[in-house]
Length: 144
Image 1 (cartoon, rainbow, N blue to C red):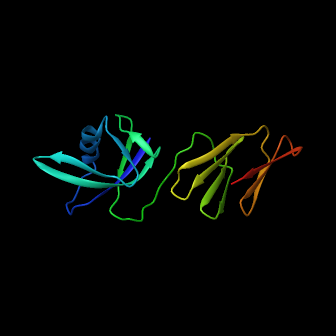
Image 2: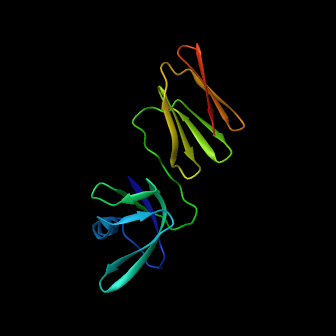
Image 3: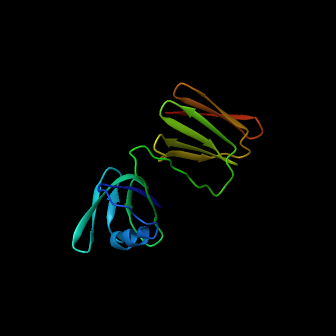
């Protein structure tokens, strides 16, 4: 679970401030696009939720929190398995893992995933993803 916040105020924030933010948000449900307030020393500090995975998240002690200064930000996604290939099309990202096809939207949110035995490759044409698997003996078409 991950949240990227943009401060809506002008003040420098130290890296350890993330722990203060997490402590203030634990137990709260937030979603991408929300503005959240954190009370600190009698003042309400506002942050815009630029990204959250999942889209609606209940913050806990393990939630990864990052801060960004910009509306445009860099997002790094961590996977347990090695990425074999990345295919980009329209507003979607197709990631081929060892035996899995994962489809994300342009913000990095998962919209589809499916496991395949002996995944060989995937190709894209328009809104169709063709997945070759089972040693090249099966073809699965994913329509988006």
